[in-house]
Image (cartoon, rainbow over all chains, first blue to last red; front, side, top):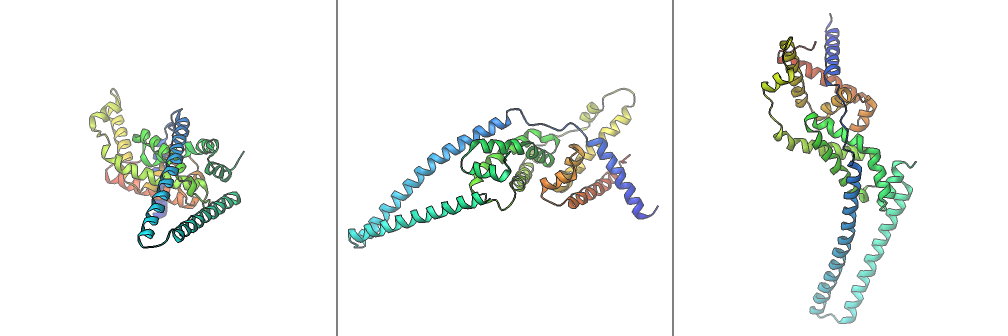
Length: 110
Length: 186
């Protein structure tokens, strides 16, 4: 028997042993698996949606007030302060709208 | 019938029915992949892995850009998560001594042969556990679940020839390990 033949015989032997010893019923998921996932996912997105907006609004208000206080203490008048804050708000809103639009286009193309 | 990309896009827009359809489509394949990595002693843990994978996917759906197939993405997440869980579960493995082997083998005529067979099964399972995770998964999917090489390749994200080579190398390693323990393959 050549070395290759010997290795082939060993491989076949092992294949037979594994076929014989490993074959067993395939385990199945519990019957309510899907319902559990969908319920958990829904709860997750409800919570996330609600808290995301609260955190975001709190962040915007806090940073606007902080900027306002810093700029006023630096001796800037109210008019330029309001102008800067308005420009920053409009700029951020435009950027978010642009990003959201691009994501929607990418999704519809996919 | 929608394809995966359409379902993913709808799920990204908050459509819960689309997400439920994705769960229905992939639940068994994700669970089997988890079982193939964790092994037969950890089937409840594999179900937990499948559950956590779907929640993780739901959580990160918004960031999924669709550059890869949804299937490849979910299989990759499952594989990595199952390997992590296995690392932790390894320390909780129940200890089996020879009394358990006797119980497994039963009693009566041919006891010695049954004992030897049970011993070989136990040794085989122990040897499989020492193989690299990719080999273990390929081996269990092929010999335990009877999955086709193509299916295994899809779940592991590798070409079919690579799966064949995993199986070949795994058999070779197992043969050597059993021989070292003084056990035959026939």
